[in-house]
Image (cartoon, rainbow, N blue to C red; front, side, top):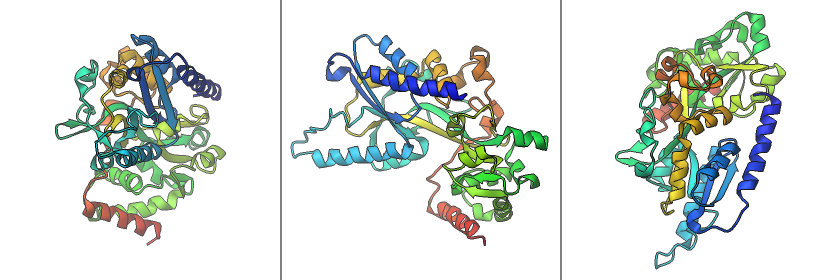
Length: 380
């Protein structure tokens, strides 16, 4: 995405949302309050949704900068609900604009939200496009289920990618294609790694032919040696501050979320990215309904609207992530700009070898990951 396109898109979002928040008074049933991640909902989608509604509606969409902020919002709303409940069970806050009908939530946050009763199950009966979500290579209709309950509506997804400086690798005469390339001698001191034990240990396990979610990482004999060799390649560990060293040329190659990488204005000019051949970590965002908020027709219509084929393609081209609906569309029916984007739409084999990082491996397994990470970072 060029600087001018990103600037125009950012401006369009600001103007579009402002326009959508104006208008005549509407009934509570025709008011939709949604919290989402910044850049996750393109303004053209909101305008199109307003046009397809049968009656005028107030669309109150507001953004947060981080997924952690959205989770903390669920915690706050839940606490407010508990504090506001009186002996009669009446909930005076239920229609407060601070309590959304829907909020976006990351896949890794879903188990904690369920465990702490911050969200409630969804009913897909009114979603006309639900059955069009593909089962392969990712089973989107089962992914957010726990038992017979559906806890989220898949909205978008992406991957952990390798991003690199095009000019530096042109001089080297090769480009990174898989995790193993990060260990090459010419990248010594030129690598930025995520400050995340599961990501760094996971990509090393993947290089060795194991799963990101291997439940006994300490039983992999070569793992620590490989991690120590990888650490010698690294200039820094950071999940947020690697972009400027990359743009300055201090770092030649970095690991990051596809969502963040595609949002860098210089992407496609100075920078290129690749989904590793041996597979990578997946991430996904869901629409979820906060606990104790009544079911709402407009919120169900919004969820279903996001899966309409044309809207799903629009989302995928404008929001730095891909709609799950796109994976069920034959490639020849997709826009060329989407077909040719190997980050937004990796080939099926790479996706088949990819996986979501599971946070509920059990205390014993998670303790092993922590111990390995501490040992690595202490330089032992």
